[in-house]
Amino acid sequence: MKKIVVFTGAGISAESGLVTFRDSGGLWEQYKIEDVATPEAFAKNPALVLNFYNIRRKQLLNTKPNNAHIALNRLSSKYQLSIITQNIDDLHERSGSKNVLHLHGKLMESKSVKTNKTYPIQGHELNLGDLCEKGYQLRPNVVWFGEEVPEMKNAIETVSQAKIFIIIGTSLNVYPAASLLNYANLAERIILIDPQGSKINDIEVIRDTATKAVPCLVEELLIF
Image (cartoon, rainbow, N blue to C red):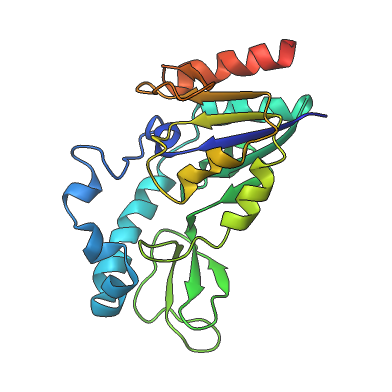
Protein backbone atom coordinates (compact mmCIF):
# COMPACT_ATOMS: atom_id res chain seq x y z
CA MET A 1 0.00 0.00 0.00
CA LYS A 2 1.24 3.49 -0.83
CA LYS A 3 1.81 5.76 2.15
CA ILE A 4 -0.23 8.95 2.35
CA VAL A 5 0.76 11.52 4.95
CA VAL A 6 -1.72 14.30 5.73
CA PHE A 7 -0.48 17.41 7.53
CA THR A 8 -3.28 19.56 8.97
CA GLY A 9 -3.37 23.02 10.48
CA ALA A 10 -5.87 25.36 12.07
CA GLY A 11 -7.87 25.80 8.86
CA ILE A 12 -9.44 22.35 9.03
CA SER A 13 -10.61 22.86 12.62
CA ALA A 14 -11.81 26.40 11.94
CA GLU A 15 -14.50 24.91 9.70
CA SER A 16 -15.85 23.07 12.73
CA GLY A 17 -16.14 26.41 14.51
CA LEU A 18 -12.86 26.47 16.43
CA VAL A 19 -11.25 29.90 16.28
CA THR A 20 -7.64 30.00 15.15
CA PHE A 21 -4.83 31.99 16.71
CA ARG A 22 -5.09 34.66 14.06
CA ASP A 23 -8.85 34.92 13.60
CA SER A 24 -10.33 38.36 14.13
CA GLY A 25 -12.67 38.18 17.09
CA GLY A 26 -10.89 35.08 18.37
CA LEU A 27 -9.52 34.30 21.79
CA TRP A 28 -6.11 35.64 20.88
CA GLU A 29 -7.48 39.16 20.52
CA GLN A 30 -8.48 39.04 24.18
CA TYR A 31 -5.15 37.69 25.43
CA LYS A 32 -1.52 38.36 24.64
CA ILE A 33 0.33 35.25 23.54
CA GLU A 34 3.13 35.97 26.00
CA ASP A 35 0.57 36.02 28.85
CA VAL A 36 -1.02 32.62 28.19
CA ALA A 37 1.16 30.46 25.96
CA THR A 38 4.71 30.49 27.30
CA PRO A 39 6.45 28.72 30.20
CA GLU A 40 7.17 32.15 31.68
CA ALA A 41 3.47 33.03 31.65
CA PHE A 42 2.61 29.84 33.53
CA ALA A 43 5.26 30.54 36.14
CA LYS A 44 4.03 34.12 36.58
CA ASN A 45 0.25 33.58 36.55
CA PRO A 46 -0.73 29.91 36.33
CA ALA A 47 -4.40 30.61 37.12
CA LEU A 48 -4.73 32.88 34.08
CA VAL A 49 -3.08 30.32 31.80
CA LEU A 50 -5.20 27.46 33.11
CA ASN A 51 -8.38 29.49 32.68
CA PHE A 52 -7.45 30.35 29.08
CA TYR A 53 -7.12 26.67 28.20
CA ASN A 54 -10.29 25.85 30.13
CA ILE A 55 -12.14 28.24 27.81
CA ARG A 56 -10.63 26.60 24.75
CA ARG A 57 -11.39 23.12 26.10
CA LYS A 58 -15.02 24.02 26.76
CA GLN A 59 -15.33 25.29 23.20
CA LEU A 60 -13.79 22.09 21.86
CA LEU A 61 -16.23 19.89 23.76
CA ASN A 62 -19.08 21.70 22.02
CA THR A 63 -17.52 21.20 18.58
CA LYS A 64 -17.80 18.26 16.19
CA PRO A 65 -15.53 16.93 13.43
CA ASN A 66 -16.47 18.16 9.97
CA ASN A 67 -16.71 16.26 6.70
CA ALA A 68 -13.05 16.97 5.89
CA HIS A 69 -11.93 15.17 9.07
CA ILE A 70 -14.30 12.31 8.28
CA ALA A 71 -13.45 12.00 4.58
CA LEU A 72 -9.73 11.63 5.25
CA ASN A 73 -10.35 8.35 7.06
CA ARG A 74 -11.66 6.75 3.86
CA LEU A 75 -8.13 6.86 2.48
CA SER A 76 -7.12 4.07 4.84
CA SER A 77 -9.09 1.59 2.71
CA LYS A 78 -6.52 1.94 -0.09
CA TYR A 79 -3.49 3.60 1.46
CA GLN A 80 -1.33 3.46 4.54
CA LEU A 81 -2.60 6.67 6.17
CA SER A 82 -0.77 8.83 8.71
CA ILE A 83 -2.03 12.17 9.96
CA ILE A 84 0.24 14.79 11.45
CA THR A 85 -1.49 17.81 12.95
CA GLN A 86 -0.45 21.15 14.35
CA ASN A 87 -3.83 21.29 16.09
CA ILE A 88 -4.20 20.50 19.78
CA ASP A 89 -7.88 19.52 19.42
CA ASP A 90 -9.06 15.89 19.18
CA LEU A 91 -11.31 16.28 16.14
CA HIS A 92 -9.29 13.83 14.03
CA GLU A 93 -9.60 11.15 16.69
CA ARG A 94 -13.30 11.82 17.19
CA SER A 95 -13.84 11.46 13.45
CA GLY A 96 -12.38 7.95 13.62
CA SER A 97 -8.73 8.59 12.72
CA LYS A 98 -6.40 5.96 14.18
CA ASN A 99 -2.88 7.14 13.39
CA VAL A 100 -2.59 10.77 14.49
CA LEU A 101 0.61 12.51 15.59
CA HIS A 102 0.09 15.80 17.47
CA LEU A 103 3.04 18.12 17.00
CA HIS A 104 1.88 20.71 19.49
CA GLY A 105 0.31 18.51 22.14
CA LYS A 106 -3.24 17.67 23.14
CA LEU A 107 -5.74 20.05 24.69
CA MET A 108 -7.63 17.23 26.40
CA GLU A 109 -4.54 16.11 28.30
CA SER A 110 -2.55 17.49 31.21
CA LYS A 111 0.98 16.73 32.26
CA SER A 112 2.99 17.01 35.45
CA VAL A 113 5.24 20.06 35.60
CA LYS A 114 7.93 17.87 37.15
CA THR A 115 7.66 14.36 35.69
CA ASN A 116 6.04 15.18 32.30
CA LYS A 117 3.71 12.20 32.76
CA THR A 118 0.44 12.84 30.93
CA TYR A 119 -3.13 12.42 32.14
CA PRO A 120 -6.52 12.69 30.41
CA ILE A 121 -8.68 15.64 31.44
CA GLN A 122 -12.25 14.79 32.34
CA GLY A 123 -14.60 17.63 31.43
CA HIS A 124 -13.14 20.98 30.48
CA GLU A 125 -11.44 22.24 33.64
CA LEU A 126 -7.86 22.00 34.85
CA ASN A 127 -7.24 24.16 37.89
CA LEU A 128 -4.65 25.17 40.45
CA GLY A 129 -4.40 22.37 42.98
CA ASP A 130 -4.91 19.62 40.41
CA LEU A 131 -1.85 17.50 41.08
CA CYS A 132 -0.17 14.39 39.71
CA GLU A 133 0.29 11.40 42.00
CA LYS A 134 3.72 12.75 42.97
CA GLY A 135 2.11 15.96 44.24
CA TYR A 136 3.17 18.29 41.43
CA GLN A 137 0.86 20.75 39.65
CA LEU A 138 -0.63 19.67 36.34
CA ARG A 139 -0.38 21.94 33.28
CA PRO A 140 -1.91 21.66 29.80
CA ASN A 141 -0.11 19.09 27.67
CA VAL A 142 0.55 21.58 24.89
CA VAL A 143 3.76 22.90 23.37
CA TRP A 144 4.11 26.55 24.33
CA PHE A 145 6.06 29.18 22.45
CA GLY A 146 9.74 28.78 23.27
CA GLU A 147 9.44 25.04 24.02
CA GLU A 148 10.84 22.22 21.93
CA VAL A 149 8.51 20.17 19.72
CA PRO A 150 9.13 16.65 21.06
CA GLU A 151 7.34 14.85 18.20
CA MET A 152 9.26 16.66 15.46
CA LYS A 153 11.67 13.78 14.87
CA ASN A 154 8.80 11.31 14.46
CA ALA A 155 7.00 13.71 12.13
CA ILE A 156 10.08 14.08 9.92
CA GLU A 157 10.49 10.30 9.71
CA THR A 158 6.82 9.89 8.76
CA VAL A 159 6.90 12.58 6.06
CA SER A 160 10.11 11.17 4.59
CA GLN A 161 8.21 7.93 3.81
CA ALA A 162 5.25 9.60 2.08
CA LYS A 163 4.42 8.80 -1.53
CA ILE A 164 1.61 11.38 -1.38
CA PHE A 165 1.84 14.35 0.96
CA ILE A 166 -1.32 16.39 1.56
CA ILE A 167 -1.21 19.70 3.43
CA ILE A 168 -4.52 21.10 4.67
CA GLY A 169 -5.40 24.41 6.28
CA THR A 170 -1.99 25.71 7.22
CA SER A 171 -0.11 28.75 5.99
CA LEU A 172 3.24 26.93 6.28
CA ASN A 173 4.49 29.88 8.30
CA VAL A 174 4.76 28.21 11.71
CA TYR A 175 8.17 26.68 12.33
CA PRO A 176 9.54 24.14 12.91
CA ALA A 177 6.38 22.40 11.64
CA ALA A 178 6.48 24.20 8.28
CA SER A 179 9.89 22.68 7.58
CA LEU A 180 8.28 19.24 7.17
CA LEU A 181 7.79 20.07 3.50
CA ASN A 182 11.55 19.80 3.08
CA TYR A 183 11.48 16.11 3.99
CA ALA A 184 8.89 14.90 1.47
CA ASN A 185 11.63 13.77 -0.89
CA LEU A 186 9.93 10.52 -1.93
CA ALA A 187 6.54 12.11 -2.58
CA GLU A 188 5.16 11.65 -6.09
CA ARG A 189 2.51 14.26 -5.35
CA ILE A 190 2.42 17.13 -2.86
CA ILE A 191 -0.98 18.78 -2.56
CA LEU A 192 -1.85 21.95 -0.64
CA ILE A 193 -5.48 22.69 0.24
CA ASP A 194 -5.92 26.26 1.42
CA PRO A 195 -8.15 29.12 0.19
CA GLN A 196 -5.14 31.44 0.14
CA GLY A 197 -2.61 28.83 -0.88
CA SER A 198 0.41 30.02 -2.84
CA LYS A 199 2.20 28.07 -5.54
CA ILE A 200 5.50 26.65 -4.30
CA ASN A 201 7.66 24.72 -6.76
CA ASP A 202 5.77 21.60 -7.93
CA ILE A 203 3.10 21.65 -5.24
CA GLU A 204 -0.46 21.17 -6.49
CA VAL A 205 -2.56 23.96 -4.96
CA ILE A 206 -6.30 23.64 -4.41
CA ARG A 207 -7.60 27.06 -3.41
CA ASP A 208 -10.72 26.02 -1.55
CA THR A 209 -11.91 25.20 1.94
CA ALA A 210 -11.13 21.84 3.50
CA THR A 211 -14.78 20.81 3.74
CA LYS A 212 -15.23 21.33 -0.01
CA ALA A 213 -11.87 20.19 -1.33
CA VAL A 214 -10.98 17.21 0.87
CA PRO A 215 -13.97 14.96 0.01
CA CYS A 216 -13.37 15.60 -3.71
CA LEU A 217 -9.66 14.84 -3.42
CA VAL A 218 -10.36 11.68 -1.46
CA GLU A 219 -12.74 10.47 -4.20
CA GLU A 220 -10.04 11.09 -6.82
CA LEU A 221 -7.38 9.26 -4.83
CA LEU A 222 -9.66 6.27 -4.22
CA ILE A 223 -10.46 5.94 -7.93
CA PHE A 224 -6.89 6.21 -9.13
